Amino acid sequence: MSMFLCATVLAFLPGPPLPGRTRHHDTRRQGWQGAMATTSTAEAEDALLQLLDGAGGRGKSLNAAQREQVDVLAQSLEQMTPSSDTNDSPLLPGRWRVLYQGAPGTETRFFSATSWKRYLSGDGPSPIQNLVAGSGAVDRLYQVLEPDRINNVVDFSDAEPIAGVVAIEARLEGKPAASRLQFRFSGGSVLVRAIWNGTLALPYPVPFELLGENAVGWLQTDYISPRLRLSRGNKGTLFVLAPEPLPNDSTLEALLAPAAPPPPAAAELPNEPIIICPAQFGTTADYADLLAQLQAAGHPALVAPLKRTDWFRLIPASLTAEYWRGELRPETALPFYFEALDAAVEATRASHPGQKISLVGHSIGGWIARAYLGQLPAERRCLIGRLVTLGTPHIPPPEGLFRALDQTRGLLTNVQSNFPGAFHPEIKYLCVGSRAVKGELRGGGLDGLLGAFSYLPLSGKAANVGDGITPYECAILPGADELEVDAFHIGFVPFAGFRLLGTTWYGSPGVAEQWIDFLSS
Image 1 (cartoon, helix red, strand yellow):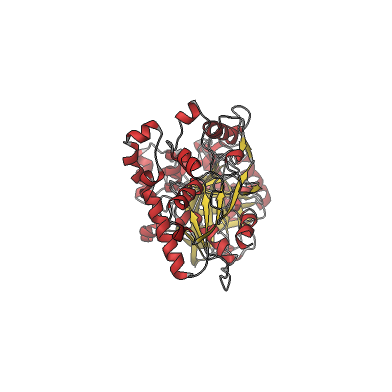
Image 2 (tube, one colour):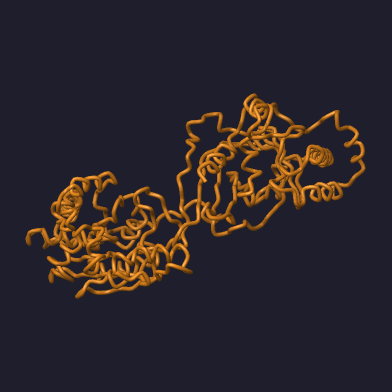
């Protein structure tokens, strides 16, 4: 997969520019062109589309004579076209599927030294582009032309076992000649289908802003009709494209659109301030959308200031006898988290004096918040008015084997033993959980399998129900208010910072409002 992505990234980078052209001429093909001179555009289109019908790899399966015929038919259509500027054509915007791409009179191969020499000297197309275009893993290639950008979309949404799309975005910079669009590559997206109805949004690995003029190219369209477009790029590549109203996977392509702006913060923030206690490896950036929702609801909010590297401070605790006996204590293993909460409380207290503070603990942040409250002196604990936990595994594993294999190495047992249930009567507790995923070792797909392997060590039952990580029965504290929502455990990959687009989690719109109401009551 990584090799495929690297090839995809490089495939669309402009090579050294070729001299400008307005029409293609080749004296070697005068015989063909003369024969086609009396052919109508409809007949020429039919001949070209028939030639490409069923051609695999966007023309890769064609032999040299067939590729020659493609170019001759393309030139004939270009010469039949009136000299109008296709940039002004209402047919140009929209999604175009690539039926064929190749350099006229040449055969480009990835492992050919000649192909690389032609590319690097500006006399031929990219061998990497040819490799990607001809790959069987690529279902379709699109060019999506919009008023201000071109999206080059590599579609492998039907591939197994990894499905998704790669989109390379180019911003339009002008129309330097008739029928020619100049563009500059500006970014891209790598979207891969993942668990929990989500799509993993991976960072694009090319820093286009550092490429300077090497990121600039052009696309010239000398023929366009309701069913066909012929364009030539600055790499010397001929593109034969057909309009395609719908993408192969509309939900994936919808994720390529620019993200909607977050809801505006309320003009005033009169409600209680909130501190988010993040999941393991979670940072402020991971909760940006949730923070915006809280502020839109009138709550000043911040995330306990933890860095991902802070979690490495757990390593010394793992070298102690208490760790191996499963008897770790929060005050010795988690001082870095307590320090972050102390800093957040002090900052909130200074900016909102006299107001009670609410804690929102996500995943293990919920039981760490319980441990934090337990070790605070009464005069500090009185600053906290509410605790909401989201998908938190509150209940220690059952006695026996699962307790011996406790992933928290006794931390959760310690918290539950010393501060059971809704322990502090002066604090209002709300536990939020979900039954969105049933654990299944067979027949439940990746969601069910992950659920089974997560639920088993926490509850002793693989066939439990929960949010995909935490069983519902483990997410509820005795004596606390209880709220069941339809959501998954998390909407991002915390140790990497990648988003799970489309995954409905506890912080998603429509879900978060349900527990935010508790904070405002």
